[in-house]
Length: 118
Image (tube, rainbow, N blue to C red; front, side, top):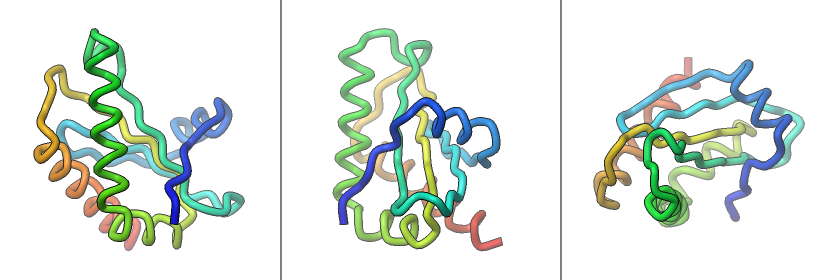
């Protein structure tokens, strides 16, 4: 199953307007259940305020997408069952290595799973 990217200004606006949130440093997640979409949609954002250099922002995005693709089975299957739109925002002012980011992303997904079970 392939990861679908969150695109479109209207979907992103709606996600930040009515979506719920959870965070696990250095990541923050907004999510919203959307029955009209076929699969889950995921977006990644690294604000310019957090990392000034475009090279660093692009590196973080590449790392997060690689982690998502690597752990696709344990992440994407539950997301597709719930038909969820998700935006992941990187909030740290410094670069982290891939192992630290992977543990943060997996703990963020676990928090999301616990919040949606309620």
